[in-house]
Length: 368
Ligand code: PMP
Image 1: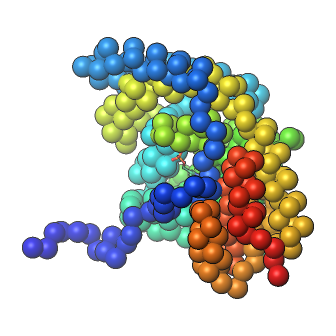
Image 2: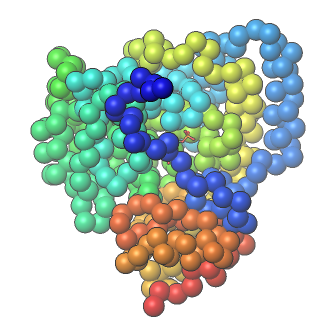
């Protein structure tokens, strides 16, 4: 029997990096340090309390969580959005899917500049939006003149900019971001007469940026068509929690609310996320260490003859390999899983614990 599967999904594969049982897993940009005993206890207490009311649906508007995200951002980036500027969902992946449901769809375009996070094209496919891949410069940074021409020609409803970018690791230049926001503010998206293009800055790795690199959150007051997304999957060491959030104009949050599923954030997720935010400093205690280890790893890879892209994230994109698949397999054979992604001749490695980084370097060897 044939199922009425949509032709758009025919021959498509589900997204996902290999989940292999090897000793050293440096392929999905997780934080290698699990929550401390103190934070685990706080989370267990919060989850225990939520369980008492498990017969009830959760708070649909996750009021407590919004307040705590606002307080966290005030401390992390100096910008304190009001709770009605905040949205949360099961990972920033879900938020982006909701953004496309609300603002893209049939007859509209979604654009990014590749290489970038490969899920953007999948959200577009799933919402029957047209995906447009603009090109970057030779150094994989944004090429502003080209980006402007692409945006003005394509007139996308949504422009995704990951900063720091995945898979390259490089943060977006702030002046360039301002320039893109100005350009987008002049563009009437195809299929949305009278509207303006949205710019979504995906800051999944923001906490790993180096000192002095500002967050796009600082521009929210000035640009109502800006959306900033973040996640607790990386710096917060809580990838298993599935909690992402967005900050934007309150009117846009009201519109997003329309397309969410009923009670999309479980009471357990809300309770544990609140406990995590109460212990943000503890959970992120290793971020400084990861930054220092990243910089040391970049130096060491360069010393060994590899080309390494600048990283403001917890991963590093390095090359070049005429046959990167063979290289990936060679490293895997020694018990270290990295990721075969990024520009054609590059591989990506997540910064792990200090011994994991050492195991990776031992497996990789030198560039001959
Ligand atoms: N954006 C980028 C750039 C990412 O790399 C990831 C995760 N790999 C995400 C968003 C999604 O993260 P999550 O759904 O876990 O919040």
